[in-house]
Image (cartoon, helix red, strand yellow):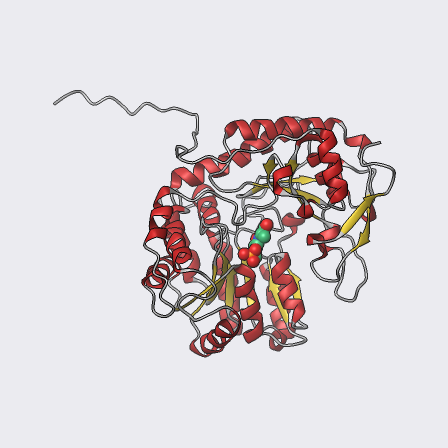
Length: 469
Ligand code: F0G
């Protein structure tokens, strides 16, 4: 028998893939970016992507697919009804969620819209750890109230809590005790995107589920980032270190009655989503709305090849080397920012770094949109596109009044399997540079905006002559 030597341990975490196809990115000058920004009404959503060097606007649908996903797309069965692609998609989703009825949708908000259409009525209340903006908008569009019930730590950017995405269970119990008949369902967003990409613990899912069952209210997961959430549980929750992300995800879904998903995140594909549920009556109503707005139940707004790409993607999202690389790149950027005293939500979340612009730019009041201003300056100086999660996104109330968002954040969301370590090092350099200009950053005002989801299309202008004094 040859002598067995121990496995050497190396500490560098590498990208767990090699690159087979590349897409060039385009350099611009600061003067070009200044012009592009002005033409876009100081709204990064309105920029041409070709004017962006590193695009961290969102991790939604922006990732790279694997060679196995591209291969699966060739197997796509475009039959209108009963396609084999749907069978593979459904098997993949059921294998992870265990839920009974699976409806493919073109993306997450379509699933939300159908769920709100079948389950809510005017005057209802839907609690969640924190609603994402489209979920909130879909709930409000039917005249119901979207209520955020995160734990207290979630509102404190620097509080170090392993599961800052948790829902406040006593608050949920109080709500159900006093207003049960107004609450048709409870939601839990994993990870909690608007709260910093923070995970929810299995203990919390279990407790929320127990309270929901006690009051007879169905619990739905908004499970866009279920794989990242599962990996955080493996890393942080006692008793789960030896379990696979897949086993953890399966346990998480075992506590819920349904789910909405934007598969543009942990589905690892560029488009897609689903609505899933156990209840047969609700499923029948959902199917009717699906046919009305999305398509026949075995494709629901997607091509057969999209369903096949997703069937593979759901599995790949749960692979540990991938999750380790993903969470570590984000954590690394967070460490670099903290070393330079740039305040961020701590600990870093699963898909993004969130800069606390309210704290970085204390000289700007909420009505001058500090996070929006910071995101514009990041683009101007370094060609980096981020997104504001602050008072432009959340400040306008359903009655038309303005209320500052609880936090003024700039989110740098990482597309999956898209950027490498040197991109992250470049980002750190840009952010440190912008951090050194912090006192010179000036605010903006809104020039025109629609009443709903205004951040996508609003036009703004600097309050003074320019963004930097
Ligand atoms: N729920 C959460 C938690 C999300 O993050 C998103 C989308 C949705 C629902 C809606 O899904 O876009 O497929 O319709 N989030 C993207 C983002 C847009 O940038 O965070 P969708």
